Structures are given as structure tokens and as C-alpha cells.
Amino acid sequence: MKKLISIILIIMMILGAVACNSTKSNESKEEVKETEKKTDSDTDGEEVKETEKKTDSDTDGEEVERKPFKIGFSVWGTSDSHGRYVSQAASWVEELGGEVIVDVAQGFTIDAQVASIENLIQSGADIVSFCAYSGEAVIPKISELAEKNEVYFVMWDTTVSDPAIQEMVDSNPYFVGTTNEGQFEAGYETVEYLAEQGATDFVIIKYAIGVAICDERVDGASKAIDDLGLNLTYVIEVPEDTKKAVEDTLVNYPEVNAVVAVGGTAMYVTPSIQAIESVGRKGEVLTSGFDFSDTMGAELEAGDLSLVLGGHVVTTHFANLMALSAYWGDPINPDKEQLMIPYLTVTSPEDIDNFNKYVVGDVPPYTPEEMLDSISSDKTFDDFQKIAMEYSIEDVISRRGE
Image (tube, rainbow, N blue to C red; front, side):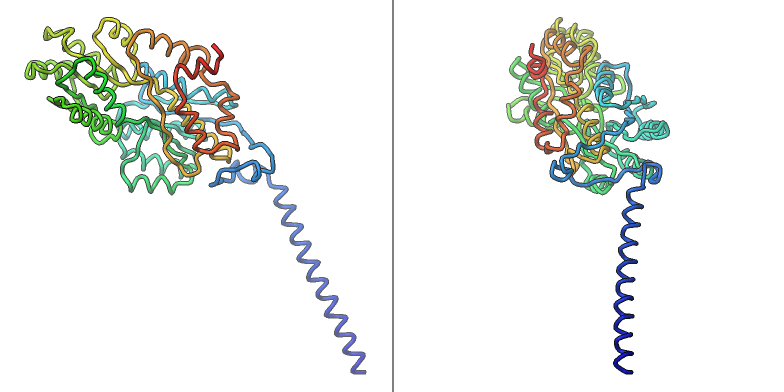
């Protein structure tokens, strides 16, 4: 009898174990089914955010899903040539299956920039793209807005110099990275070029206080002046009336023979040229500036302008490509590094003609195939950086086979 009871107990234990395993198996299958049944509507359109760059092996040879996108592009204005050109370059990515909407901020203040970003987010932007031209203090505000609304953001022509702000954006899962040019080197090279033309005594026009781009250009120019044994006679800071400020400086310091504006050519160099002429020193004072203007061709031809560094309109293009790669779940810049963009140097009207034809003409300098290839899964950030640094008029001509 005891033996019979033991046998019955053993059989019951075996049946219980089988039933338990069967239940677990069924639960596992149900979980798989639930996962397979999920759609975009189940997740309210949200995508899984990846933090590492996919490779072909990670995706088992599958292509990254390139879903439609809307990029919100915030800019200070489009009436000036630089604002117009960077906005144009930002729209090149529309050929990849999306839309770029441009919002012109109503002023150069932090509040105006924040309002611009809010407008873009309310318009349904998946990504916002901006330059922190109103100062670094705008960055935390926009970072918070982007994270709250689950919108990716990328900064162009911006260097973050405050470690606390950098730490904040780096921790934001929607931050993509930044683009900028070698501002220190650009300031240095500007002085070198003018020195070769005979300049010895310099005035620097500083367009902002506490803006890293401006400070780096000034530091580079000042270092070149020191290295070359030249004279930094005076620094004009944030002039309300540039023409009058330059006139007063030239009267008080008649030895000055070069004016270096580290801000926009239209806003600071053109009034400087007018000031030089008004005090009777036309042809005696060299000038240079940053960012292309609509009048620089005539000013170069007349000999009133010596050098302009600009044409870096691709800064917005590459920023948007970085953001798209993250939005598509395959970030080309997983470590959120700064992408460096080269300046074009213009010293003649011919240089401007080539820029107008090959960069901002009817045909974008990059084809859709080239855009996609630059952020493909087999590319690293170093590869992407190399492609960006190859940007030049000669590069565009070569790729077009002309």
C-alpha cells in the first residue's frame, strides 16, 4: 500500500512539473506575440532611441528605416545673405523624404530664440536646428524644451564653453551634437593675410560679449598680431553705430591701417568702409570680415574690402544630417562630438561667382546619394568629419566631373 501511494505521488509531481513548464512556455509565446503586434500607434509614434552607432552586423544587413521627418530650422533672419544661405543649405535634406520649416526669430535675444523654437515644436517638428547666436544662456532653455517634447536638437555654428551647460546637453537623450568652424585659426589667418598686404596697426570690432565664436576669433587675431610683432591699437566692442565708432577711432588713432570685423560683413565691414571714406582715408585702411554679404563683390572689386571668410553654409547641412541619423535610429555621432566645418576664403569677385554657381546655385553641392552615404551604417564619425572637411569649391567641381 505504501509503495502504491509513493508511485502515485511521483506521478503527480511529474504532471505538475510538465504543467508548470507548459505555462511558462505559453507565457513566453504570448510575450513574443505582444511584441510582434506592437505598431506605431501602440507607442504613440515614439521610436526606440539608440545610443550606439549601428554597424552592418548589428542590423544583420538590414537597412535603417528612413521615416519621413520635419526639421524646424530657427534663424535670425533671411534678408541678409548669410541667413538666407544657411537656410537654403538647411533645406537640402528635403530630398531625403522630409520637410524643413524655417522660423525667423523676432530679435537677437534669448527670449526671441526660445519663442522661435517653441513655434517650431508646436508646428510638429521632429528635430530643431539652431545657432546659439544670442549667447550660451539660451542653450539650457532649448535643451529643456526639446527633452520635454521629445524632439531632437542640433546646434550649428555653436561652441559650448561652459562645462555645466555641456554636461547638461550631453545628458539629454535628444541632443545630437554641434558644428562649428575653427574660429581661433580663422582669426589668426585673417591677420596673417592683412599683414602680407602691409597692415601693421589693427582695430578689431567685437560684435558680442560672452559668445564663444566671437571670443575665439578675437583671441586668434590678437595672437597673430602678437606673434607677428604688429600693433593692436584699439578694440571696438558691440557698437550701436558701427560707422560712427570707426570714424571716431580713425580720428583718434590715425596710425590705424587695418580694421578686422569678427562679425558679419554686412553689419560691420560695410559701415567701416563708409567710415574710412568719410574721414578721407579711402585706399589707406584695409578691411576684413566674416560671413558673405550681398555687397562684398563690389567692395572687393573697388579695393575697399580685402578678405572675407565665410561660405560655411554647409554647417547647417551637416548639422541636419547628424540629426537625421539620430532620428532614424542610427546616429553618425553617438558621442555627440563637435563637427568641424571649413571656411571658404574670398579675396576676389571670381571667388564669389564660383560660390554662387557651385554652392548656392540651382543644384545643391551634394546629391541625395552622397548625403545618405555620408551617414550610412558603415561610416564612422571620423569618416563623416573627413567628408565635411573636404568641402570646397574645388571639391564640388571635382564631384560633378567638371
